[in-house]
Length: 128
Image 1 (cartoon, rainbow, N blue to C red):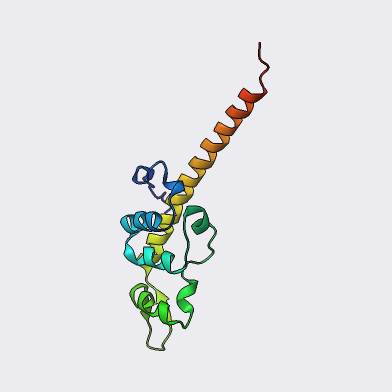
Image 2 (image 1 turned 120 degrees about the horizontal axis):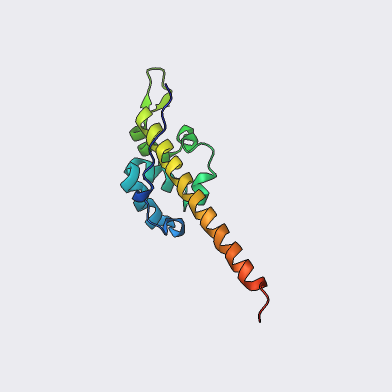
């Protein structure tokens, strides 16, 4: 059974594409929680366009690095064999966030493209 995920873009402000760093992290915190926000901040991802280019946000958790230990313990289960697995709730929250941001990014791109076209038409029209 296939179902479409409802993405409520009204949760995102119109100017969200201009958000960087702390303002960006605060929105993520409100949408999906501090753990995902901390994971994004740890990797110095400053905004939506940068986040949308990341292949695997959880990849950094595989590193043996002191700064990763705290967030790893919050986002992953440690198995008996010492391996770690990302908790499904974090995967689904992150996927929801990405889908929401992609929709908003697409809307923003279309609006910008449309605005550029109108501007181009206005500047190329002959004057009387």
